[in-house]
Image (cartoon, rainbow, N blue to C red; front, top):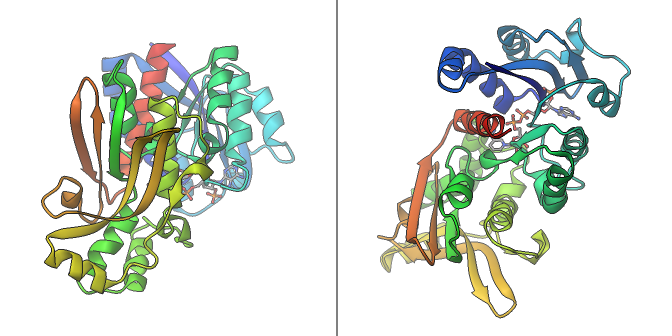
Length: 342
Ligand SMILES: NC(=O)c1ccc[n+]([C@@H]2O[C@H](COP(=O)([O-])OP(=O)(O)OC[C@H]3O[C@@H](n4cnc5c(N)ncnc54)[C@H](OP(=O)(O)O)[C@@H]3O)[C@@H](O)[C@H]2O)c1
């Protein structure tokens, strides 16, 4: 059996969910994959704790359920920088689930680069490092022998990246359209039912789906980030995130939704990729779709994608995900895949 020495960078919703699934699926993981994950280090906003013989999963979950910090653990490494900590540890895998910082990608970007330079593999739940240095992170894999996986960064548990990269082998993308942000999809649904944007945002925050500052979702940037990751993964897209034309749902009014409905249309926040003379035109904007189309059937907490390729014609898939457990499960599936590849 392979024991994977794992570092959890961030111990919030996603990585706590990961630990919960490890606890409930421990035996199955050994039986089906001959794998076991030993958590040798954990980090939160207070710093790092390191335990060579492995942390007790339940103790870590209880710590965070009690809203305590890692600094209260006896294995806490006081006054040690993240860089020193990673340099000292002998690990196999980093799970990068820290908050997405779209100013410079840190701390997730620097810690994942350090890990890759040590030849570890990295699973990302955090999109930010991929937005900043997608190509460089992959280059580090070639240079040092690690691997990266990030299927949970696009639509949580929906295996968009896996299907594109693993299953649509040798195919070329013709076009794609998708709904990649469940919070905005839910808000549009609530507006359509007669609610207000403010109430829908509050409910999304209460459910833990929307951030305290939901601007990133509402203004379409979260959707654009996912479109960027998809394009970098499946095509030779060489543009940057700023090349994507982005309009959010902040100015969508209920009257527009009603008027569209009278014409058998629905308004959705759609991400699209269409070929043009210079390569690809990438766009995120509120878009009218036919009421009986696939994208129109993605309601509320659902996300979906329709992909047209040369060999496989049209493929569409969607998920319903109001709970972040799907994201945690996607992190685990990535971790398993990477460990089986090595
Ligand atoms: N939740 C979802 O459904 C979902 C879905 C897809 C992707 N993601 C992405 O996954 C990542 C994690 O999401 P989450 O929901 O787990 O977030 P979260 O609940 O806010 O947890 C973030 C964790 O990161 C820790 N942290 C903050 N600053 C840090 C630092 N400087 N160094 C190390 N750790 C630090 C926090 O510490 P404290 O515990 O001390 O606050 C917390 O434990 C985010 O980038 C998010 O965008 C989330």
